[in-house]
Image (tube, rainbow, N blue to C red; front, side, top):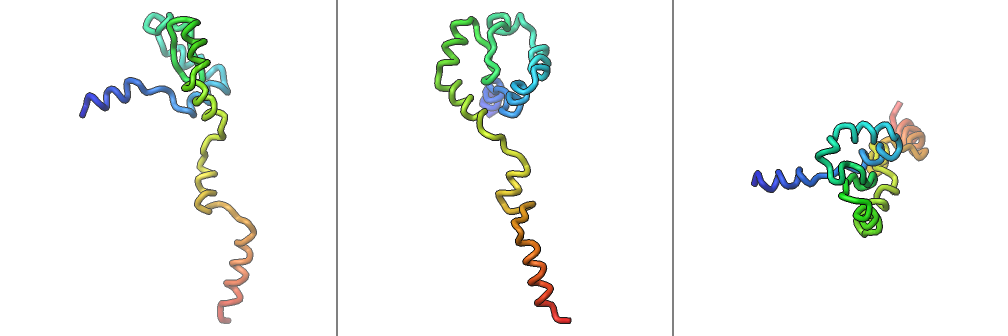
Length: 114
């Protein structure tokens, strides 16, 4: 069981929110690249796909990757609006006032005996 877990974490790529931060701020991407040693990376760290967070051996491999289905799928996912806490709360009806709150309190006040 331990070997399976090790493989899953070994091939783990950067999450979508991290990639969005890389695309939005070049400083964020520079900090990430600074944590890697160029000698340990494929192609000495010259060929990097920002959207997929992958290193490639050469320019030809990078160009072929950008034409591929996995890269295009990742681009489509990154174009979508990211999930936030606000959208999650709105989905279950929390924090959304459609004008019904005032009507509910008014009807509750009418029902209360005085």
